[in-house]
Image 1 (cartoon, rainbow, N blue to C red):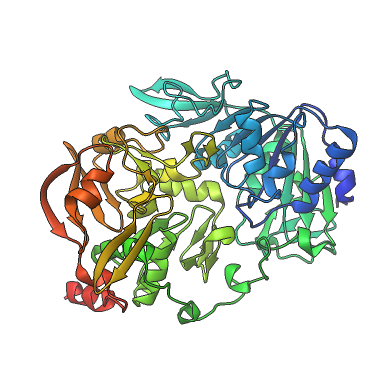
Image 2 (cartoon, rainbow, N blue to C red):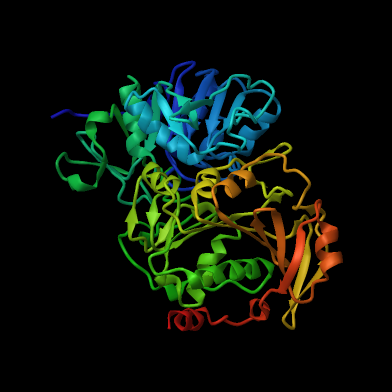
Length: 527
C-alpha cells in the first residue's frame, strides 16, 4: 500500500513554483487550510517567491482580516485571481482596484462545477448560468479592472440555445483542509461543516499533473478510517501536513468546535435565541409569510445577511422543522448559520459536495430563495456584486436567482446611517439613509430582470417600508408599512418611479413585538 509523504507546512510552501495555478478549499471562515496558506505567505514575504501565481477558488474564503484568500494579497505574488466571491478578501480587492493583478468574479456554482470538468479533461464548462448578467462577456465577462483584458468566458450556441463556455485550464497545486488522514493518504472530513470542493479539486489538480497537499488535524494508522467517509482517497494525494497549531485548524474562524454542525450531535432548536424586533426582522418576517403557502416538501435557500433571519423567524414561529433549508456549501436541512459560520447548518440532514448542490440549484430544484438587496433598478435588475471600488462578488447569487421559481430580495430601503424605530405597531423613519438602493440603473447586473421575466420567475423585493413585485410590465409597488408616507418615505427616496396601482398595507403583526402565529396560520391553510 502506498505510504503518503508527511511534510511540514513550510515544506509544502516550497512546492509552489512561479506562475503556478493554485486552488484552495474552504467556505468563508470554515474549512480553511490556514497552516498551508499562511506558510506560503510567509515564504513570499521572506524570499519574494513564488511569483506571478494564479489563484482560483469558488466560495468566499476569509474574514477581511488577512486570513483565507488574503494570504495571497501581496504585489508580485499574484498575477491573476479568479474567484466566486470577493467580499471577505479586502486586501485582494485593494490590488484589484490598484490594477496590480488581473481579476475575475464568476458565479460560485459554475466555478465549483468547473473543477469537475477540469478533472474529467472536458473541453470546459458549458452552462446557461450568467447569461445577461455581468458574467456574460457581452457585458463584462466577470472582468474587474482595466488590466484584465482576456475573456475567460465565451458565448457559444448549442442546438439553438446560447450558453456560456469556460475553457479548461490545468491546475498545478491544491491546498485542501481535512480532519483526519491515514498513513496511506485517505482523508475524511468528519469535523468539517461540509466537504465543500475537496473531492473535485483534488481530482482536478491530480489529473492536471499537479500536486495535492492536505492539511489535517491528525494522521492515523492505515485502514482505521471508515472507507464510506473518505472524501479524498490516497490515490489523489501527494503530501499530508499535520497541523499542530489549533489557531490554524479551527472548524470556523474564532469559533469553538460545534458537533451540531457536523452531524456528530444534535441540539434542541429552541435553544437558539430569537432575534430582537427591528427593521431587519420585519423584512425577514414579511419574507417568512411566503412559507405559509409552501408544502412540507418545499426546498429553500437563504443568503447571507438579512435573509439569514428568515430561518430564525421560522424557528421562532415553530415552523422551522416543517421546511427544508439548504445552503450552497452543501448542507440540506437544519438551520443555516450566518457571519463567519455562513455555510454551516445546525442539525443538517445531509452534507453534499458544493458542486452537487449547485447541480440541484441550476436545475430549478429550489422552490424559494431569499437573498440580499443591495441595489435595484427600474428593470428589476439587482446588483450585489460590485459598487465602485468595493468588490463584493456574486458568490452563488447568479446560480440561485437565475434558476429558482420564487425569488425574494431582502434589504432595507436605503442604507448609510439609516435610523428607524418601530413603535405602537408602526414604522417611523428617524434619519433617512444617505444611499438610495433603488436607482435608475445598477452598476453591475448580478440578477437580470429581463431574464427573469422571460423565464416566468416570480420575484419580490421586500424592504422594511415597502414591498415590490416584478410583473410583465415592470416593477410594481404593492405594499407599504404602517406609519410610512408613500410620497415622502418611498417614492421620493427612489431613483425611478415604480408602477403604483393597488397598494396595500403590510400586515400590522409584522411590527408587533410578539410571535406572529405563523404555525397557526399554516395549520389553518392546511385545513
